[in-house]
Image 1 (tube, rainbow, N blue to C red):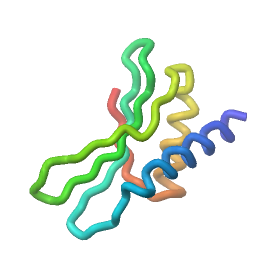
Image 2 (image 1 turned 60 degrees about the vertical axis):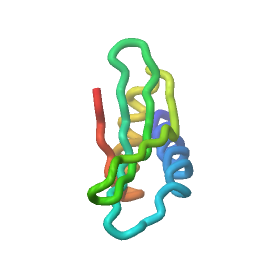
Image 3 (image 1 turned 45 degrees about the vertical axis):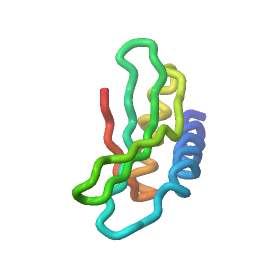
Image 4 (image 1 turned 135 degrees about the vertical axis):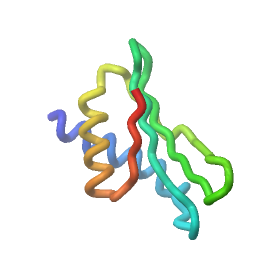
Length: 90
């Protein structure tokens, strides 16, 4: 059951990221996952920046702190299936 949850989370994140991912030259794209320190939500951001410019960041998803395992599995799916760069911050 949890594998299906993680696949669903990965699909949700990718659907939110896809319109922002313009695939322009000299641009770096990444997904940033901020894990909770205590009982806060897990926040997912999409970031991009042209080389030499400031980074632009948009929140694309937020999940309850009880879904940590499903989000971690979704991160692996995003890395392997969708070939996205994912940075974790704790």
